[in-house]
Image (cartoon, rainbow, N blue to C red; front, side, top):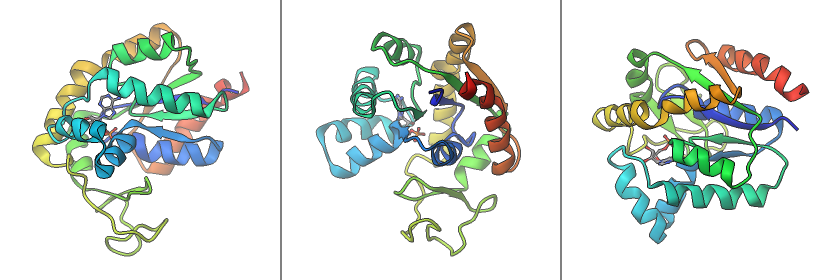
Length: 214
Ligand code: AMP
């Protein structure tokens, strides 16, 4: 009990990286809507094709599409715990999660000032296995190769500067209101996201101690 978590934060705050680490440490699956949508896009499914139109412009995929895939995945996972990465992203998605009966134990809100975000994202390198790297802050051991699985790394199609700026605006308008939404439910755990990955991870684990004992 106590490991049904949401990772909240602007693009580039380190949500995905921390979600992968936390999932490993807590022994629960990471559920990333961005990864699920990218897989659907590569597989060329009708849903993947529809989602790709929004993703390439930095816009949000319609709520009903994302709610459907998350509900299906959480039902498969049952009550064993999970880390939701990139969902919910709108108040409508958060409300749907509640209405569908998915109980959340805590919301980790990673806070990073806007000035850092563009630099962080445009240096980002990703692997299809879910690991992420950064050209300067967290380079892979061998250039362009994933340390974890040996596959080639790539730059995400939506990590270009103009799309990143759009994603930051979308975050401020649609996702930032979730901070208040979860604060009102006494679930919010604000975390200072500036610093080394391990330092931020320790801050998160410390905040979660009380929740996990609870
Ligand atoms: P991410 O990997 O979380 O940064 O997500 C990449 C892109 O996928 C976003 O910019 C959106 O276009 C789409 N996406 C991911 N999660 C959601 C969501 N919960 N709601 C709507 N769109 C999403």
